[in-house]
Length: 49
Image 1 (cartoon, one colour):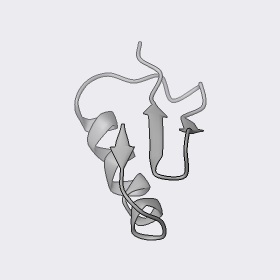
Image 2 (cartoon, one colour):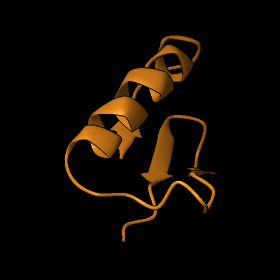
Image 3 (cartoon, helix red, strand yellow):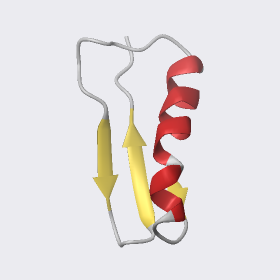
């Protein structure tokens, strides 16, 4: 989960996804999900194998 103020928050999405993908096996055949909650919170979901 990322928290912060836009637009700085949006710039952290790519690096955070890369960190999640590097943390273990993930399923590249399924989509990554960005779930926008209030404008200051984003949940990132990476499918695992």
